[in-house]
Image (cartoon, rainbow, N blue to C red):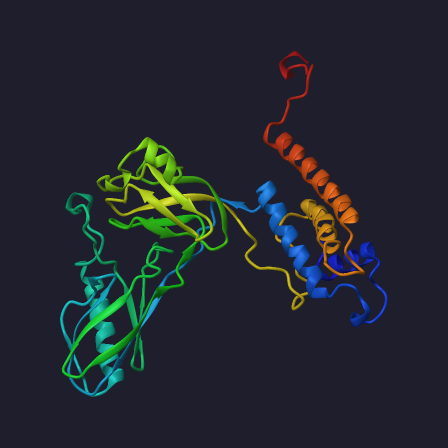
Length: 349
C-alpha cells in the first residue's frame, strides 16, 4: 500500500514538478494531499468501499454540571427534562464534597432500578424514562455519562438543576456519543444523530421489527401516509435520512426502547496529512490506482498560469472514469460469480 510520501512523489513525477525548492514548485505538498483526500472520498462514494455492518465501537455521551455557592441545596438535577436524582442534596461544607454527594445520589438512583428501562408491559406512549446515568465528581464539577448502548441518542440532552438557598450551577449539554452501526431508539424521540462519517445507510433493521426499515423522503411520505406527523408512537416503518446534517427522523416515533442495526458506507475516519507521511489510504490497495488520475485532474484545474489546463484535466478525468468503470465490472463479477461452463459433475468422473 503506497504511503502519503510515495503518493506525493508519484504525483510530482506525473506533474513534472519535482525539481527546485518548494517555493519554485507549482504545487505545495498540502495542495497535493488535499487532492488525494478528495480522490479517496470520491472513489469511496462511487464504489461504496468503506462499507460496514459490524462496527459497534461505542463512545458514550457525557455532560457536566458545575456547582457554585456556599450554602443552600440542590433540589434536583434532570437530563432531557427527566429527574436523575432521588432527593435533595444539601451543601456539605465544601463544593467538592457537595459535588461528590450529588454524584453519589445520581449513581444510587440509577442502581435502585427506579429509572432503569422497565418491562414492555409497563411502558406508556409518550412517556420518557430516565436512563441509568453514571456520575463522577472532580472538585465542583460533576460529569454525567450515559450508559453503554445509547451511542448518539443522548447527544444534545440538556442538563438542568433546581437550586435553593444560594446554590447555583452552570452546565454543558450531553455530547460526544457515537456508534457507527448501532442506533439506540428511545420512546418519544423522533430525531437522532448518526455518525458524522456516515455517507450512506444501506440497511436499517430494528431488533423488534421483522422487515428492514426503509428510507423515504418527506414528499413521498406526504403522498403515501398523509398526516404521518400525527401517527401514534409505535414500531418504526420508515426513516427520513438527512446525510448533510447527519440526522435521521423515525416514522412513527418509537414507543419502546430498542436497538437498530445499520449497514453503513462511511467516509475515511482520518484524512491523510503531511504530519504523518507514512500513513496509507483507508480504501483497499487495489482501488488506490484511481487516486492519481483524480488528483491529476484536480491539479490541472488549479487557477494559475503555470498549472491551468482544462484539456489535460479532461484527459485525466477520462482515465479516472475508465478506472472506476473497470472496478465496477470487477465488483459485479465478485458479487455474481458465473460458474464455469461444461464442467463434468464430480460424481461422473
